[in-house]
Amino acid sequence: MDDSRAIHLRWLLVFWLFVLGAVSYLDRINISIAGTALAGEYHLSHVQLGSIFSAFLIGYALFQTPGGWLADRLGPRSVLTMGVVWWGVFTALTAASPPAAINPLSYLILIRLLLGAGEAVIYPASNRFVARWIPSQERGLANGLIFAGVGAGTAIAPILVTYLMIHYGWRSPFWVSTVLGLVVGVVWYIAARDAPEQHSLVSPEELTYIQKYRTSTPSADSVSAQSGTSRRSETVGGSLGQIVANRSLLAITLSYFCFGYVAWIFFSWFYIYLTTVLGLELKASALYSTLPPLAIVICSISGGALSDALTKSYGKRIGRCGVAASALVLAAVILVVGSQVRSAPLASVVLSAGVGALYLAQSAYWSVTADIAGNRAGFASGFMNMGGQLGGALTATLTPVIAEHYGWISSFLTAAILIAIGGLAWFLVEPNERLAFAEESSH
Image 1 (cartoon, rainbow, N blue to C red):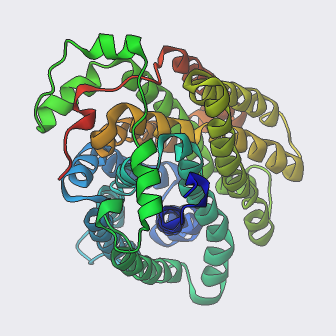
Image 2 (image 1 turned 30 degrees about the vertical axis):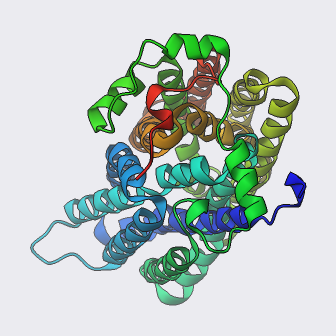
């Protein structure tokens, strides 16, 4: 049978990873929309609210590498299911009133820290799934679809959370998020398997196709560069040592730090920026704040498809690295322009275009990491994503400080400089490289 006619069970599971991602982002950013009401009830300043945002990102960042290691060892099916249950519990606890003896700020920082630790598994585990289920030349689109869930969850959140807040109070969105997460987690556990060889519904044609194209072929130079490294062990230390010594993965991690800094301006502060700086009312602000996530959905998918198409025609240097670098530089230019706009509708459109340009690069990060790391894709992408979330944690705290002392224009200009640096870092990446542990057997 022709490869192109194979049954696409892998894409049904990619779609459910999109759903899981959407729910996870609803869980994590509902507090940024409910933040004004929460801060009012507990008498918190914007800087204190920023520390609560940062707590989530610190927990999320610190557990990226352990989460990726767990996904490599236990498989994405079990790890994602356990993660959904964990973050459901702590989403619910966000809405629960702290005991009288505990300071509300300390309580919320602790709960959001632990929520972040639970959510840390989702994308390293997803990338581990991609490394086993998705042929190399399809990974751009697959990751684009998975990360479109970021935009979908972020687009749904303002409408759903605002409606629930108005009718049922600021705590209600957290209860709803908890239930949604548990439902999609159960479906994932029933439907998914760690590898296509384990799934009874995978046709022989699709399995043959996946196995034929699952491993990317490194260039001769890449193989030569790695030939001095022994095929070591399955230990964390062995894998981590190769990752931190690898120029490509370090450059990707640096770039993703810059990516995370800019992305979390939109996840944490864009809604508040529209209301407090541009003066929009709650309902109008909720409408305009859906534009960035819609741009994320469109550009994640189109960026992934473009990356795959250019990779097939011109190779990964152009299709992965070139697309990512160009997109990030474009995002920097748009942020500079958008920071000067004072009209709320126009600013929403221009800045949304900036985050859209940012997400044209998203799939390249995860596709290249899966190609380089192979059977340790969860571990390597967890390390990379740790860098991204540390960037997000920094922006959650630093953005309001810069805005308070120098104005919001300076906050956006800082982001533009960082994302331009992130684009330049892609010139240090060798996308055809394979690490020594990439082909070790999985467990």
